[in-house]
Amino acid sequence: MRPLRARDKILSIDALARRVARARREGLRIVFTNGCFDLLHPGHLRSLEQARRLGDRLIVAVNGDASVRRAKGPGRPIRKAAARMELVAGLACVDWVVAFASDTPLSLIERLRPDVLAKGGDWPLEAIVGADCVRDAGGRIARLAIVAGEGTTRELARIRRGRSSGRPTPVGRARPVDRPKPASAPRQPPRARPRRRERDRPH
Image (cartoon, rainbow, N blue to C red; front, side, top):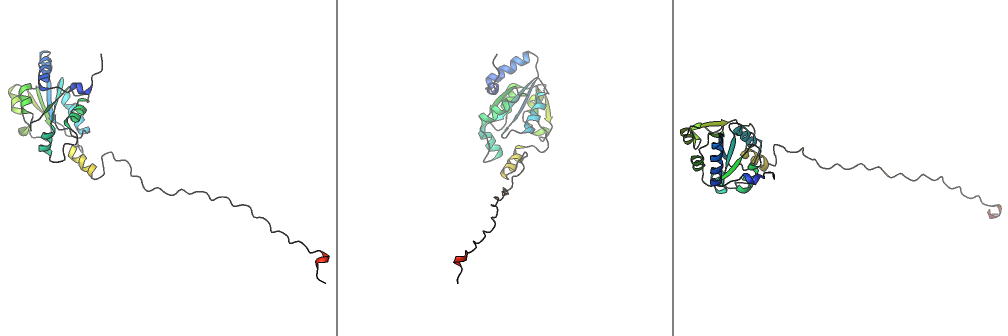
């Protein structure tokens, strides 16, 4: 059996609905969460790991490019949707990835009816899209723990300032190398002047 590639986890809504129906027949609990995942960082990873522990299968819905731009403003997303989805799909805790083009994943939630709808703890319960739909179907809402110091906006600000959370120690200007002076040649003793012979002396 060939190893599963990350992009094999990226599904269309119809293919995903079939997987969810099959998982339900097996008695498995389905967890759903969503996000932009524009610059994947440890906060994303830990939140998704926490979400996965709430059930047996984790669906991650990823905002399309236009949706990110409307939500985050010009200059976003940093990565195109296909790259963002593949990176998320590469995480071991993620079972299925699906894209959505609208501003919210409400239509996905209404169709899939997950058992657990998970969202970051910075979202108040009343602002979580699809919460009523999930509750009406007998599911529950879970707020995920926030990882302090992690966030795409924060990390982008660090990068734009020329810093990052893992910035290497700055390298200073190179110091000149002290090279040894060449050894001087030994001094020669002065030559003795030749003595005049007797016949050379003036008379």
